[in-house]
Image 1: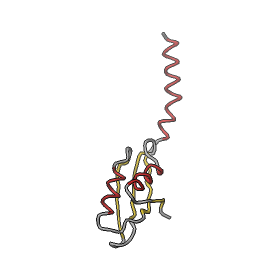
Image 2: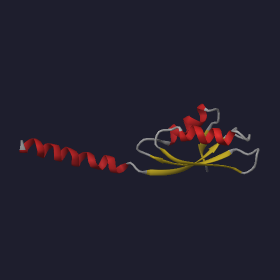
Image 3: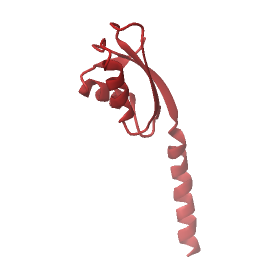
Image 4: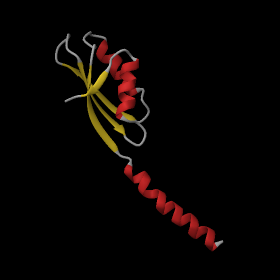
Length: 98
């Protein structure tokens, strides 16, 4: 019994660093073809639908400009490719803002 407990404790200690690597990350996406009044809310909604996303802030310089989305997410669950896929699937291709 003690031997099993020791093995379980060792296994848990080995897995702990993997969970510690996940964290919160913030990225800014440049979302293209999103120059209408309704585009910003659609982009925001599509990003908020990605599991692991915590906050989304969408801004637009003017009514005809592309949208910039600032997204904070749990990088152990979500990823930049998943965020880009969400906006692209909604009709608005995106990439990391430069």
